[in-house]
Image 1: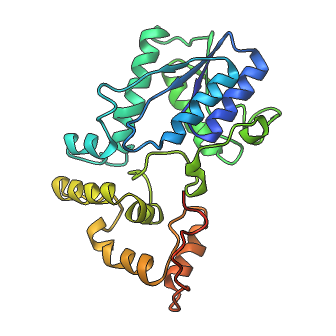
Image 2: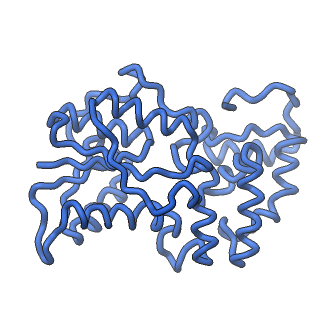
Length: 271
C-alpha cells in the first residue's frame, strides 16, 4: 500500500503525515505538495514543510502548476476572467492545486475505467470536526478510483501539535486560522481586513482584478466599497487584524461606538 499524503503546508496536513509515517513507516509514504508563489505563500510555511519532511526523513514530491511562481491566485483568475463558475470552487484552487493533482495521479498512479486502485490511499488532514468535508472527499476520490484515509478523524491520535516534536507551526497561525495564501479568494471580510492592513499590494491588486473581471471577490460587496470602513477600523478604532478572534466577537468590537485606546505598538498577534 502506498500512502499519498496531501501535504499542503498547514498544521493538520503535517500532523496527518506524521501519524501516517508512525503507522506504516516512511518507505511507502509520499508527501505531495503544490508549491505556491512566494508572493502569496508566507516563507515560514515553506520552512515548516521542509522541517516536517526532514523530521520524517522524506523528500517533498511536487505536483506544481505550470509557471507556478508567477501564478498568484489573483493572476490566475484575471487570466480566466472569473473568480468562480456558478457554485463551483474558486478557480485559483482548481488551476493551482486540483488540476495539477489529478494530472500527477493520472501520470504516476493511473486507474483503469471502472476500477479502484487497491494499492493506493490518499491521506487528508481533515479531523473529527469536519465530517461533511470527509464524506465529500470520499465520494469525489472514489469516483476517480482512489481510496482515502483520515488519520486525524479515524483511529487513535498520538500527537496534537508539531511543537511536541520541536517544530513550530508557521508564523501565519499567529494571525490566521490556516496556512492558506495571503489574500485568499475563499476568505471573508475579516480576513480581507487583514489583507488591507498587512498586504496593501494584494489589496490594490484585488481591487484592480475586481474591476477587470466585473465581479466581486466577497459576496455582495466590492473591496473598494469597504475601504472607508476598514480605514476607520484600522486608524480610529485600532482593530487588530486577526482571525484568531471569533467572527461574532470581532464584528461586535468593530460595531462598538467607543474606540479602543490607540497604541503605537503592534497588536499581540502581529508577525
